[in-house]
Length: 428
Image (cartoon, one colour):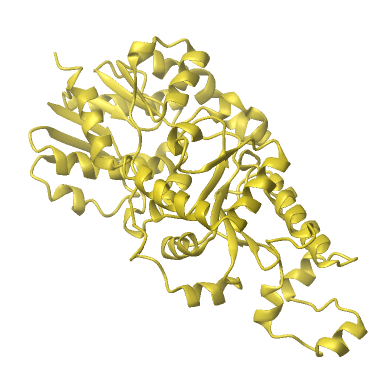
């Protein structure tokens, strides 16, 4: 077969920092090439991706570049789609795979489309109004028509398959569930950064819970902050010496999260006046004169940074992320909706205990014994789960072992094999 794959989402695979669709596309293509030498793969990029050599080294790979990306913003959407379709048709493909929810609608060859999640349809309130307005053509025209037009649809979870059927009335037998994979770093996690350097860089202590993800409403971070604050304020709390570390890129509607962190820290530390943003950035000392006399006129920078029970440390590089995951007492991910849940799977693959939601795709990914599943809308359940983690060493060990074993079931070789079966089902 001659199989075309849209690879334009792949931007920076070498750094291990790609996310979402780009992450999926990169590892799927690499695994397909390692798995199968009989088919010809035509990989479509644009001018932004510079490292095509790692793909062109294969004898059964043809690289094609969409030459008009830099002019895309000047082109009407329909005209842009016509140009893409013309280039695809010229290749005389047996099947074309789009890994990003949509197809070029004028293209009349056989096609497969992967759907990762339908959050924008299920929970539009999680997204800013301007973003929703920019996506109107995509959400109302491109995605629905693409799913009707595609010969086969790949859903990355059973939950996503259900969402597709409910939102677009697509026949069930048209959709195949193919789970994504995870790069299993193992409990030794050899690619991690030096933890001593990570601690100093971000001003964190040895004991912490960890959240990793984009700062946006869907991740339910404010509920996590409140739950951790209340756990810290319990008399004789087991979390007395623990921090909550929040890492991830800034998203949208994120300002309330930073305000919640400041309020929670003030509550935990018993500070009557919350520091302003300028004070936080400059590290101003807001202690009273008596406190300064008792504790010393100035604390070191590290001491000032380490005092915060809850810290947002921003986006972290891949090696730092692995180091943080490896040392966390638990990875906490109380999201309200996920199409797949890769961050949870990454933590499990390392052997870090997991607390996550009992909603959307998470239960089918985590399973019944590999993590603590909680109702993310109930703060008491989240508090109880974190307290249970801290007080039950046997539970931590059990979750570490079973989570690691469960994660091995999700690998890119399986993903590639099942995806290849979808392609082969479209043979003439």
